[in-house]
Amino acid sequence: MRYLIEMYINYLAAVRGLSENTRSAYSRDLTTYLTFLTEERACKTIERVTDNDVIAYRAYLSQLGMAERSISRHFSAVKGFHHYLCDEKIIDKDPTAKIDAPKLGVALPDVMSFDEVERLLAQPDAANETAPEDRAVAIRDKAMLETLYATGLRVSELVSLRLRDVNRERGFLHCIGKGDKERVVPLGEAALIYLARYINEARGVFLKGSYAEALFVNRFGEQMTRQSFWRIIKKYLKQAGLPMTISPHTLRHSFATHLLEHGADLRSLQIMLGHQDITTTQIYTHVSTKHLRDVYDEHHPRAKTRRPL
Image (cartoon, rainbow, N blue to C red):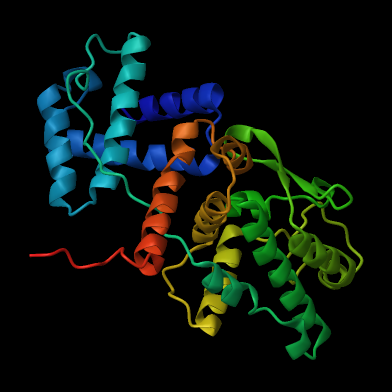
C-alpha cells in the first residue's frame, strides 16, 4: 500500500505545489496511518479499510497523547488520501466520507511585545567583537533578525533569499513562498540599513573571494540553513533573557500583529504574509482584539470599577 502514498504525494506536488516540508509531513502522517491499518487492524489492502478502521485510528492517536491539532492534521491527510483514491477509482467507497474532522477552537499565535522584539534585535552587536569574522557574524545575524521582523517572512523564505532578490533602491525584496508562489515584500529603513551593512562589510568575509547566489551565508560561504538560524535565534534569546519557547515563526506572528495594531488593513497583510486565503490572515485580528481589550482594561478609568452590590 505504500506506493499509493507516493502517488498521492506526487499528485499533491503537481496540483497544489506543496513545499518539500509539507510533502514530508503528509508522507509521515500517512505512513503512520498505513502502519496502524496493517499492524493493528489487519487491513492487507486499501480496499478493505472501513469507517470503523478510520474511527479506530483517531482513537489510537488520542491514546498516544497527541494534541487535538495534530490529530486534526493527521485526519486531514487521511481524508484527502482516501478522497484521491476514490477519484482515481482505486477504491470504490471513501471510508472517511461520513466522518467529521475534529473540531478545534481558535488557537491564537504566540506574539512578542514590541519591547521584547527590541531586546532581541539589540543582541547582535558588532562593536563588542574584535575578530573580523566574529564582527561579520554579528552584522549578518543583526541583518537576518531585522529582515525577519521587517518582512514577516517564514524562516525557509528568509534563508532561501538570493542576493538579487533585494532591491535596496526601491526598498523591496522578492520572495518565493509556499507552492513556489512569488511575492514582493516592502522593507523598512532599519532592515535596509543593516542589510546594506551586511552586504558591503560582512558577506565577503565569509565568501573569501568565492561566489554564492544565496544572500545569507555561513562561515564557510554556504547558504544558511533553517537549523542554523534556529540555533542563532536561541543564542540571542538566551542573551536577552527572553523565553526560549520563542521561535523564528514568533517573529512572523509579531510582525503581523504589530502591523494590525498600528492600522494596517487585512488585505495588505495577507499579501505581505503570502497567505492564499484571507481567512488564514484573520487569526491576527483575534490577537489584535485581545490587545485592545488589555489596553482598555489597563488604561480606562472605569474598566475595572466594582459594580454595586
